[in-house]
Image 1: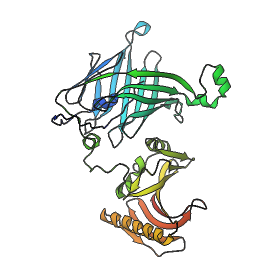
Image 2 (image 1 turned 45 degrees about the vertical axis):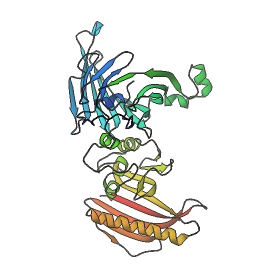
Image 3 (image 1 turned 30 degrees about the vertical axis):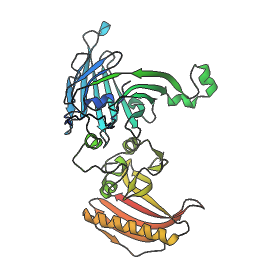
Image 4 (image 1 turned 45 degrees about the horizontal axis):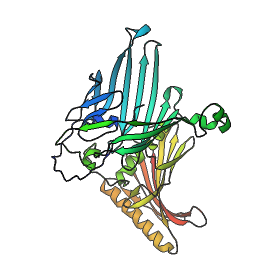
Length: 393
C-alpha cells in the first residue's frame, strides 16, 4: 500500500546552506519533501535528481509516460508490467491520476489497472488526510467499480520516527474494513477479526538520504502551487467564499465529487442528506474570514449539481446583545465593501423583522446575499448570525 503526503517542517541546525529551487516534486508521492536523493524501503529503492525528479525505481525507469502541471507536480502517470508464466507476452498497464491540495499535498489518487489476462479494468480511489504538521494520518480506499460510496479499507498511521527534514522514517499502521463494523462483535471474533474491524497491524520503516549543500524550501515556498499570495492557515478571502467554498469549484461539480472534496479536511464533521452537505466545526473553528470564525458551511444540490452554498458566522449575545448585533452588522458591512473591491456590488436593503441587515448582488450566474439575523441554537446559546449565501442559476 502506497500513501502520499507532504511535510512542511523547517529545522534550524546552525548550518548555512543555499536555498535550492526545486523544479519537480516527485518525492511527495512517497511522503517526503526536501532535497531527497534516495528512499530505501525493505524491498525497493527510489532515486531522485537534484531538481526533485524521480529517476529510477530499483534501477529502472519508473514510468513509460508522465504528465505534470505548470508547477512541476505529477498529475498523470502510465506504467507497464510484463506478465510472466501463463500470461507471458501480455502487458498489464497502470494509470495514476493525482490531485493536490492548495498546500501542495496529494489530495487524491485514482489508480486504474488494466489486466489483459482476465480482460479486466479496475478503478480504485485513494483519499489522504493529514495532521497539522503535514504527516499523513489516514488513507481511505474506495472501490469505484462498486459505486465507491463507502471506503472498503482505511489505513491509519502513527509516526514513530521523524528525520531532520521532517519526513517519517518509521511508523505504525493499522487497517480497518468498515464493512466489518456492521457485523456483530461476537461473530467477528468467531471469524478471527478484532471487534473494531482491524484486519492488519504492523510497522514500516525506510531510510532517506539527501543531497549535500541543499536546504529544504520554506513552508510558504513548498506549499505555494500558484502565484497567488499565501494566506494564513484557515483564513478565507472574500473571493474564496464566492468562488471556491471549501474545495467546491465552479457550477458543474456533482454531489459525490463535492463530498470527496470536502472530506479532504479531516477536522470537519460532515453531515449529508440526498441533496445537501453540512460541515459542522468540531475542532475549534478552523476557518475564519477577517479573523471571524465560521460556525459551519452548507451546500445544496439540485439534480446532483451544485445549486447554492452558504457560510455562517455566530456572534454570541451573552449579557450584551447590542454589542453582538453591532459587531455582526459591522462585519457584514466589511464583507459588502470587500466584495465591492473585487467588482461585486451588493445593495443594502431595508431592514425587516427577520433580517436585521441585508444586502444582495450578482456576479455572472451567481446571486450573493449577506444578512444578519437573530437566532439561537439552544436555550442557552443566543446569537446574531451572519448568513453569507450564494445561489447559482
